Image (cartoon, rainbow, N blue to C red; front, side, top):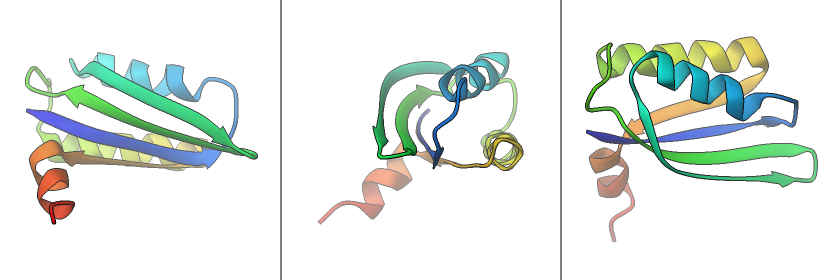
Length: 89
């Protein structure tokens, strides 16, 4: 199962490293990543493969959200099929 992970917040050292480390610890593979800085704001969107995840998807979402709160970021994860359904015209 593939998912979309978004990260938004004030730019700081190590954002990509921390998010990728958390994903790797849970057996999640990053398939594609795009990040940019908009003035002082860091934004990132990732396409990940969660089919080998060590935890249920709902728990992964909670882990990412908790990491975001700890780092002063907003991190969301959503299943790719739900993301696509929400953005279909």
